[in-house]
Image (cartoon, rainbow, N blue to C red; front, side, top):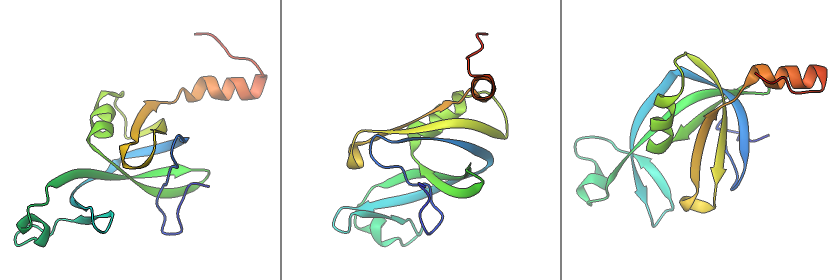
Length: 130
């Protein structure tokens, strides 16, 4: 299952996952990417060591997703945040998250999952056209 021991949704390169996403839990973060340590750090605001060193700030977001009866946190960037705004309104959405590519150059996409058609297909063995 793509949930880490710390409770984060982790997608491998070229993997996709259907989840239920809670828009009510979306939180914005400001982070810095440290190339030497190959990881990101939260910006501490005024007097931030990374800001003083000239390392650019990056906007990131986190939210709660539900997968196979378990909850997890998921972190995403600006592209996904913009895509979320184009999805239909609602506090909870069934979505497919896809990680396309490899490493830091991978692009993450999100799209609405058609839950009703999936249910009908599984129950009756055929797809209902709408």
